[in-house]
Amino acid sequence: MPRLLVVPRWAGTPRSDYYPWLVDSLAAAPGRPLDPVVVADLPHPGTPRLDTWPPTIAQLLGDDPAVLRDTFVLGHSVGCQALLHASAGLPAGSRIAGMLAVAGWWSVDEPWPTILPWQDNLPDLARVRGRARLTVLLSDGDPFTRDHHANAALWRERLGAEVEVVPGARHFNAAQEPAVLAALLRLATL
Image 1 (tube, rainbow, N blue to C red):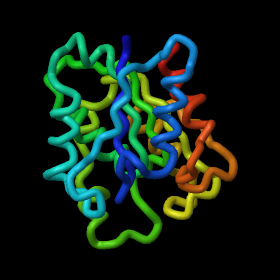
Image 2 (cartoon, rainbow, N blue to C red):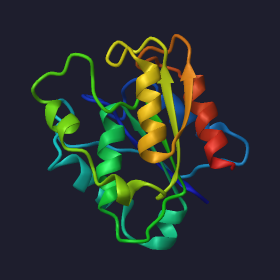
Image 3 (cartoon, one colour):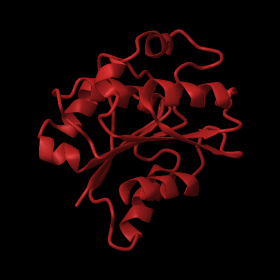
């Protein structure tokens, strides 16, 4: 059965936002389409770093090609960038089943010093492209990346992503995010 690894947002933990609801919703879904579901408990969530988050994610993913082909990943905000970096570091030829990037960005409108390394050091996109079916969920009112049209264009151009804009979703921080669950289920059943 396919598994799911969720990578939280900046300062996110397994108990943040919609993550507990998502775990419960997937457990209750007919046929349990994704099991197990692991929400990563990453080091120092309030200060995500390129030298700690991607290696931790890579350890959680493992390097067994058969397991990776049966693994879906969901990144939220900076978790998307961390997943892209971890994906770039997978062994050549590795594929994962699918990736859902929720509130994914390439830059934020008003960057702060500790986010700059994530904006200024992109992963090796040639190694990431084609590793997985990629769906990106954006909001038309994200307070961190207000130009969702430009952001969507970059996801399509850089990684060939399918992009969906969810009206009014802000940064997808609610306790329940039905659009996230629906997109994940669509990705897992393609």
